[in-house]
Image (cartoon, rainbow, N blue to C red; front, side, top):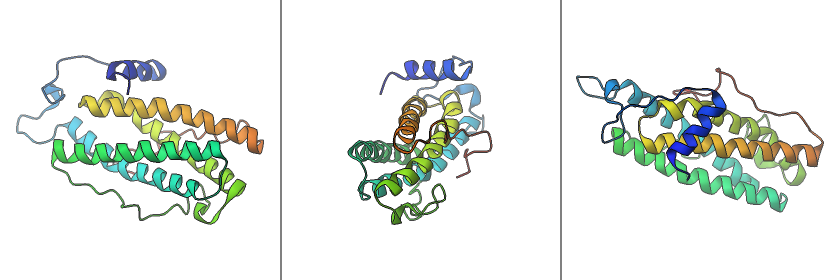
Length: 209
């Protein structure tokens, strides 16, 4: 990953969010947000809720990537799906570990049990070749857009440096991947200028899937 501050600067510039400074405790927490009686601060609750909702969201992407690798797609898309599977599996492990280490919260996500049916209105597990490619891109673009949308505020609200850096990386990486998927939709299926996957405030947030 790039340095936390480089990534945060990129996100703050892109979203016009003012990033505040200030001293942090040894664990990265803003001491002004820590309640006098102990327990998670407001920022701590945000982190727990954000990671608890993001883990299953990542798991859905991993399941979609697994289906992609079994569907006989073009080599470029297969490589792309392998990258999603590797990166997001690693990030799931980080978040599960951080929940336990920082807050004593045990998380197992959804255990990969929800399947890929219903993503974008298509049962991806039954499709092959170009039919799968079309449905996969239509589903994964808004799925990535949702991740970008909820990760932007996380960059400035997370109190642990590791989580803030992860959120900034998600914004940068998945925004670039959305651009690549849109280009493929245009090139392969003449679906140009569609499927931007923009998400408003009604999208996934802490405590929502």
